[in-house]
Image (cartoon, rainbow, N blue to C red; front, side, top):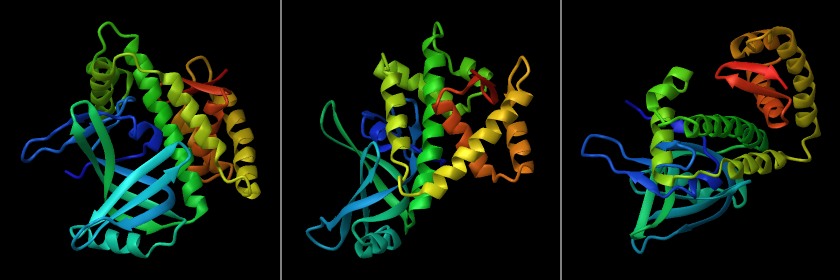
Amino acid sequence: MREHAWRVFAGEYSEANHFLKGEEKTPSYVITPLGAKINRLYLVGVLTDVENVAQEGEMWRARISDPTGIYTVYAGQYQPEAANVLSEASVPSYVAIVGKARVYEPEEGVVYTSVRAEKVKEVDVDVRDRWIVETAKHTKKRIDAVQEAMQMHPPSINKLKEIGYPSSLAEGVIEAISFYKDIDTEHYIFLIREALSYLTSGKKEFMEEIGEAEEKILEIVKECEGEKGALWDEIVEKGEKEGLERDLVEEALASLMDKGLIYEPVLGRLKTT
């Protein structure tokens, strides 16, 4: 079965130093401090540097920057299409990459993460901005899961699944808490804020669109929340009836949560503060 491609900021991925090595027919995983159990990633950022680091043949190493840090990405003879795109890409330019998580451990306790590219595509700033918003939302969900688990005695995969978190995240969170111990979730909340602040300042129309959507979505949440909170799917459905695309509704919800105007008391339900 093909592994899910996680959306993870470079600031979280680069701080991962826990690796679960698979057997012959089972995948390997990088476990981040927020419990992302990564075999594959989807990332978007600015290509800042690319060079052929092979003594013979080709092995292209690229550095991709997002608002929180740098990914190191490789592509060689076994990824010919990805290698070709990287070798010909303009620097700087926006690129989207799907790839495999990799680690290099030169000595015990020292771990460097990288990505082995499977697909590389040049994109525009709108794709980058939307990736930031979506990745912020995914990061916030992992923060919530870690905070839930840290309040459990003992932390439990089954309890997280009962709350509504998917198996892959529940397993990763419990593994992360066991390995990383005291996880500073406030640090990752700061990363989210930093990332969202990088949304292209010159894209006035883009930001105005989100601002208008936030006002509509906040009113929808107020109308539907009741005592238990408004269902995520119901908010999206009503937003679409108001003429908002699903992606824009979800971006507005992520922004409202980041601003503290709404929160998620139970997974899938939202309430105003």
